[in-house]
Image 1 (cartoon, rainbow over the protein chains, first blue to last red):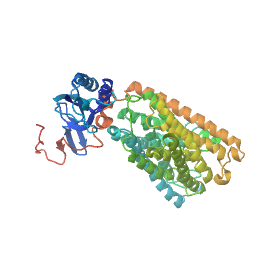
Image 2 (image 1 turned 180 degrees about the horizontal axis):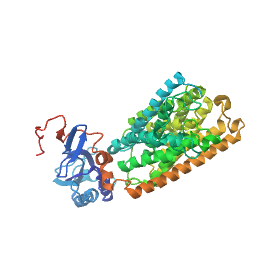
Image 3 (image 1 turned 90 degrees about the vertical axis):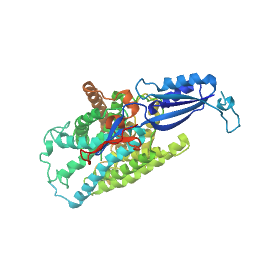
Image 4 (image 1 turned 180 degrees about the vertical axis):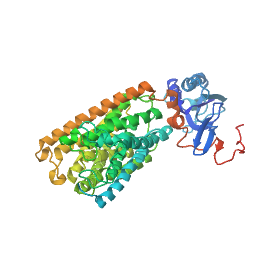
Length: 117
Length: 427
């Protein structure tokens, strides 16, 4: 089991979701985060105050998957999120020690494999 | 010539301010209906409309609308406020200058209304150029026809507060603008939802409030027509709201807030042309029945490929069209002192109304289509897809509506001297 974390542009979040659905990866969490990944800073001015926005809005996906789904998940996130410009984001893959489905108490593969598929 | 009436003048000063308030209120209404990343740009289109239309109206627009050169267009008599002074116009009891300002606020909001068709993708600069040309070439001409000494007005068409120049003009121009500018890139692919329903309701509420000046001021005084229009502005939208509630219940089993906000606008638009001409009872009927075609248009439009984003056609074009025709049936001389409609034995009034209901949409649609095609030759009308994705607020204005300040690094504040120490750079 792996935990795939994808940090992507907010405007690509819908494309990532679509790509994940197409890859039949179900069971996704997403949250809005702010981050800095080397892209050019945006300059904004509010009355007399000019600021460089060092942090950009990003969307963070967390997807826990069984081994056979690791590669398709990564491909789907890349397919949905890539624009080719700096700031497209990152994918981190972490080993996952345990997963438990709260409703049933299922552990391991049973907990990350969606019901109904 | 009548003299100045101080009571009339006092009311018209207030009414003018009320109508001007409608444009920022419209900005709020529109801003709530778009996605959060386009809040400021949407609002700014309305703010820009005030700036631009007020200036073009002064320079030439007012003259084209209310000058007396011929029945198609007003000529240059009043250009740059020539001869527009404290003396009243003929058959008027308020200073000519005040009449000019009151009418100017109408031009402003009409320009702002069209922005609803092109929000979330049209370049701010291109919109401003469009606003300037449209205010003169479309609004002023239709205002001349409907309000001024133009051919519809002289021919007997009844239009109390702008079914021709404001509502049908903006609605059918919006359709043309949506067709020329094209759909948003995510249209039909993603759910594009309103980001703040409270803005929408508050904006609609403020618009309704301002509309008492819009309709109540269109009698240019405190006479019976003004009082009638004022009262009808309370009744018609209320009836439209009830119809909307019922339709919402039938369609989705709940009464929706954004539906209610839309119903308020639709009700106000329906009564705009008819305000001073129909009885309070018929105003209620107009709200109740007139909401139907507007609701149907709003329900149908998303199934088409036309991304007329904020339904200006349904809420203004169709409602204005309905209101104009309604006068032809239900106008009552005993209430308005001018003319009866078909129901009260005067079929020719309906004919006059039909003429307006055909001519105004045709001119507005055709001229706007042509105008935007020409502007499109000179400059791109829309932002690149990438900027549309990031959002109009950041790309067009370098600001965000909901900025948190986290991660913002101070570059400069003008209050500080030159010896200021640069703030910390990110690690």
